[in-house]
Length: 561
Image 1: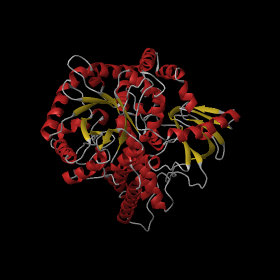
Image 2: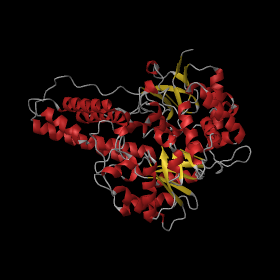
Image 3: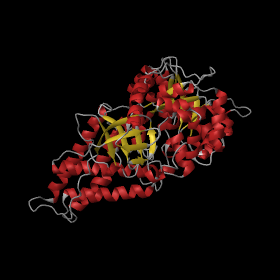
Image 4: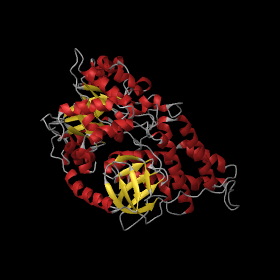
């Protein structure tokens, strides 16, 4: 029985037939020149038209997408008309190079530059290469690369998926997702969780599985088995039955001893908020405000922002909505705000730090939030990303106060914020742990890289200790501040138990994870959660921490989680 092992990023037990992602568009021949009947000027015009067509197609796809998928598509659309990419290609065309070869070489140069920058910018290299393939396909008049068309459901296997593809996966057709590359916090993994697709990433060798082969995918265990046996077929059937139960959340996160753990949703806009409310979310733990700013050459007006935020607030009357101020920079560059030439954008001017270089944008956003909150029944909390010091926290709290916002907070995603949580929380009302970035920064491991997947997991004992330190700072003398988690760690039912055991007050996640997390928490008391947190902290590795905790939670295996 042939099997493959990767990193499980979204639970589920599925049996289905494999469809391999089509190979990328073939490279134009090196040295390919313009046809004798084509002038450089005409070729440049054709290239620009092809780029605009690709951009328009990506924008159109973003219209029907929501949340993270919408943001990814909009960001990729921006890349299709990136001035550096197009100017580089036109320069080559002017030397006699064909349009296809010119865009190919220009994109390679831009992608290499981004890859060498590391961190978040390395992810943009994938976007550039995706855009390159789409432009070449447009120039050739052939279909763009993407998810294979099929009338029958299938398990999609790929090296990795371009953001534009992951953003539009159809769960009615794609039963599960398996990639040989990527990492547990890559866009592929995050969107798979948001769609409720069982998924395994960093599974080396799966590209050798032929189309039509029956496989068993266990998204929790991170395993893929060719030609599943009777026991695995039975496990898949049991999962299908459990999945219906796990799709319904009662609307109350409560543990076996009656301890309440509010379960909130991460949303990217009003459409997401409406769906999250319908799913029973007890509020919003993370409202990403980038959706209002992406794909723009200038800052949105106050009225535009007010309309966008109010749509989310209105979906949760009487409930808490935690809004994160603009997290621009790194993988979310904005032409009017960020500097694309930074040598290391992941450690550069992003989040709260953009107020250092572009003062006024944050102040105007806070004014828009305050205006949007007027007349709504939502309990609006506001937090700043990339806070590193108590002085920064105090400055943000002051800005919130001047705007009339009463509950300022901070994201804890920089290790220094966790290490000095007591002083930082002395300046604000709450903290929310962004475990994706906290893990990346603590482990010095780019979250997009498959070879570093073992490092880039919030099960790392070092990351758990940073969470423990944050909670300790929140209850230190003089503080009594709530701490939530809004990173992807909260969507892992086993890790959710550990987080509660560490003293975290609220958990926020993709709405699809609410029922599963609630089902597991309902079987555990606070004392048991504290014991399991101790087991995880004492483990010598992330792998051992996860395995030891899961061994103590038989409910996980019963539910296929």
